[in-house]
Image (cartoon, rainbow over all chains, first blue to last red; front, side, top):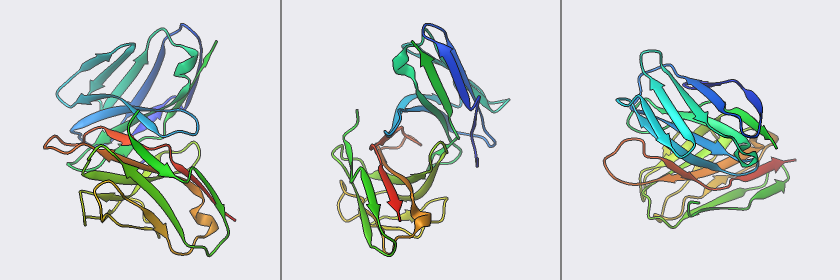
Length: 110
Length: 115
């Protein structure tokens, strides 16, 4: 990937467990965003964290950003079957466009 | 969900045909984007626009072209489709304003298959 790479590529957990996905990127950024993509659908924006922020919460989502390590993590707590999707990080190294990673495919087993 | 619409959702067509993929948004966004995504892979930006009469090529070279005659409409055209164009095409838009890299709102995509 030109900019972001997610890890792991695939993750399977039981309903109720927490899911953690990681994103590493290569250059300095203005912000980093996480998106969800359900099978056969477009992407849905989840959360944006700016380069001067270290942690951000939104409902059951918690995102951290470590600019010194050029990495971010997305934590989904108390997962549900409906959380089954692919999750992408997107970085904004410049003023214009986003670069998307390869995604983590999350499966939550009921 | 965002008000951005893509048609058709699925298209299977023969080689050599001219194709236009439609994308419309009702949010008044100036910025619009086209991405190409193969199954299980990352998104690649192929075109974007900052507003009416503005079109730019993205990071992935594409034989497609785009136009932006109206704010709400950003169609993508392939003059002569080839099997290598088989992919999913996603359209997106983002809000105006001074803030950099605003969140993008996506349509559900067009899955294109060229025989």
